[in-house]
Length: 115
Length: 117
Image 1 (tube, each protein chain N blue to C red):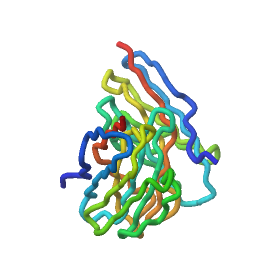
Image 2: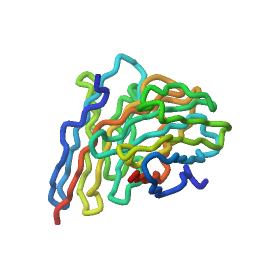
Image 3: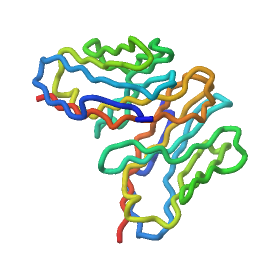
Image 4: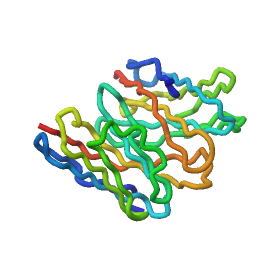
């Protein structure tokens, strides 16, 4: 079964607009972490933000925030005031449980920011 | 810290040849992951280690693939014999392992772009 689902293969947004990238997950664990990574055209994987399953507040990191809806099992990434440099692939990932647990990724969303 | 170091960055080889990809994790990290990225299949977890021991190799596509971690600072992913369908970007990542909070992210290397012709 797919653990992480990203339903938007591609998105096009005007510069300076806010954008929401969707991510839903599937787990029976009570303790888990959700992550977002950015992969620009250069290919490296850049960690952006994480949300713990017990965190009551939505995570924020600069222009990035995570809209965490536990009951819906969704962890959407919100990018405010988008910039041309935000054009990249974005991956949602999940780690279940404690300790040495694997990090499983979704298929990704390709975000293109138009000037 | 230098981060996760992978070598080579690019590899072109002929079908049937043996290929060895190398990874040096971040010092102090107990978990190491090998991923493969292709357009068709996205980011697939091939295998991961904790304290140099393979924990889950269910993602290894077939017997042609093998991975080792002889010590805490080095891992290899070997493909023998290589085939054109093995062409992909292979990433190594590391994170704090045993006892680590599930919120601990994985740090990725720059990847190895493998082309099998």
